[in-house]
Image (tube, rainbow, N blue to C red):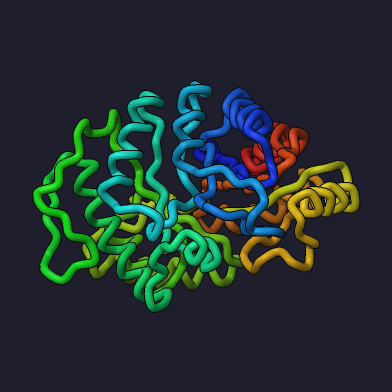
Length: 315
């Protein structure tokens, strides 16, 4: 499995900047392929008003402080920003990082932060997915240096919009989510990378749906990199790993029972985690991205790439 790629997503809440920057630089030094920020304006665990850093500003700072790792949002909230501004921001970060930017986008889901900031949350998830599809289509054109003019009645009102300078490299577009009718259709049309987090049997079904969408648009599904989002805590025993995770949740103001659906913790030994990952890898998910809450767990960062990855490479 020489093509296995690893990434880390640092939670943007319940931390200070020196601690987050230190973790970002450590991820770079350890040799990870990607470093991700989440895109939330409020904390999503515990008290929403606890400290939380803005994502694009964080990426720009990481771009200066790191040397090798790819940089993106997992995933950018489409409702937060005009897509033209998003294309401008990611192209700028690509230049700052000398060609390491990744364009991550999703429909957004956390209503609390939208209400607090006065951001349009739409009439429902279906409408936000329509906005996402329109947005990704425009951004993909802008990043290629093309001019964009919106159709009458569209969500956005671009008129002869051009983004300059174009990025240093072809910025990969990552779409997060697994909605069968709309999200996976957008993945098939535009994505270079797809991020998901469901169980193996569910993802096998999602891949079949994605393959059908790809057939409709005339695209080879093999062109899309499958990325799996997990949340790892690694120790010599499952009990110790569980204890570390519980302490991290307490630091973030959330009991384990209060963790939202889709943020399931994988706590265990490197061997157990490798065994748990193999079915996903066999399914085609050759990129694994672990979320890491503050205080960022140095031992897990070191053991994921230093011990789990070699076990998978020998599989």
